[in-house]
Image (cartoon, rainbow, N blue to C red; front, side, top):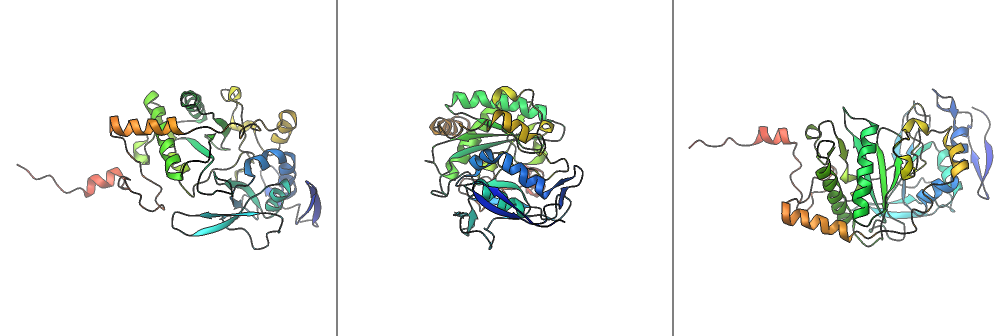
Length: 342
């Protein structure tokens, strides 16, 4: 596997064990290639992770081997990498790493971390998100191009609500749009705003976009996964490498690139060249955080005028006040008691 090497990362020396270990057999990329990638996009990945409690998606033996998600900071965490304490819906808590410099990213990559999953909060205040994250997820029968059309409509909705969105590829078939907001609202309020945005999108393109939580009701549409804003749900960070054979990355885009860019354009080999030419195209993301009040007003109108309340939470989440039953519609119909005849 090759002898360990030491790399300089932002003024720190980080030891890389087994640098020749192959992580992506189809492309021949090694652990050293992964580490070199994160050094190349260092300012971008650090901007996306700085001060955010972050879960690590680890593949110690590469994409063909076993993997696991690591929420709690590893026991051998260097003292120069800070942590942030986050609480789960169950009431339990964990101290997660908060990468604030490229050396921390490289250190995690040496552990086989391919993808970084940061919370939408900063470690100084872990109860008030500073990002509303919208996941546009194409369902079977749809494609990335459908997510693109949904994203362009989403941009219009966000602008009408006084919000700015920052798009990126997911590294798969979908698109993510991150909306920086002032950290003044709870997870429940941010999720309520995300539902309102999703419903407005659905109203404008009901034949193409859905908010249906149950897969059997979605059809061949793009699902707006509002539950990605629930507490303890995370989305892969910008610049994260995704665990697929061709080593794609979650690529930040400018809005003018969205109509023509495709996920295959961005991978471990191509992104460093793009970054060297353009820098971090989301560098200004945190400069003007938005106000959620217009989106929350929209949620209030939906409830007042259309009777549209909450939607189901993820299955592992505790039952919430006002939440509808978490029962699959077809199952609910089967379990419903017969209607008595007159």
